Length: 185
Image (cartoon, rainbow, N blue to C red; front, side, top):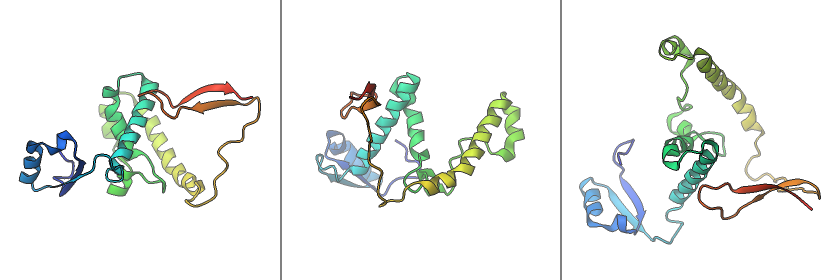
């Protein structure tokens, strides 16, 4: 694993066998990394890691259901989704870190250079139009989101005869969380 922003000052991990072997300890010490071990069954200690694993698994499940490929080929797309997904305040982690949206699409200023390399002009123009539209609509959408602490609308208001989807609380790996639709009675 090569860190993107240089060597970390400290790492936290559980006491799993992969982390307590002598090779890992000596490598961390040689690189000047402080290694902090915490209890394996204490989720508070590794909450961020567990949340990221849950997010990646959820994203991989959605991509698998849409594309049908195996999870290994979809992993890079799932990893790209994480820093590009807006959070509560409407900013992505990429925007918070770098102060600008992720450069996924070509900038309009360099369109002529890109068109020389890209064969499908219509596709590129369409993608750039979508990016401009996203930038224009993002702030109004962010303004309409409920602020933390505001009362929420009741979770459901079903009547007999309505079609409903049922959430699986413990779905199998890479299976949809929802089944249905079912007719309520």
